[in-house]
Image 1 (tube, rainbow, N blue to C red):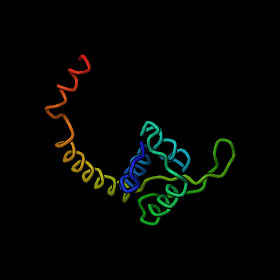
Image 2: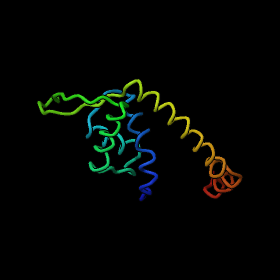
Image 3: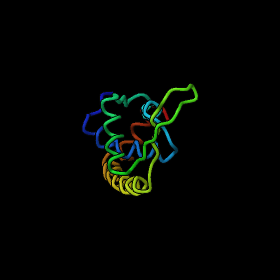
Image 4: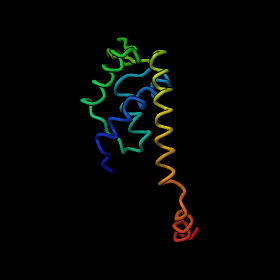
Length: 121
């Protein structure tokens, strides 16, 4: 599925902040986690992820520090800050409203049982 770039951009900040709320991470691991969470439907380029991480760092939503991977390579590790956690909470409220609103239109509608019956369930 090709997800509209505006929708991908809109969900990028809360997605990255939520991933970092799980624990410290680095660019490639964040990229991999996004792919995993979306079942492979979201594929971010480095040109999207790294500018976002730099912006979140400038906004003080994440802290970035250089470290060394277990293989001995230098990596930039990102971790969510208190300001980032507050922003994530705000983003969650906004997305919950959007999801609830759209779900009222698209969710469990009267046609869902009829559709299920066509599947033999």
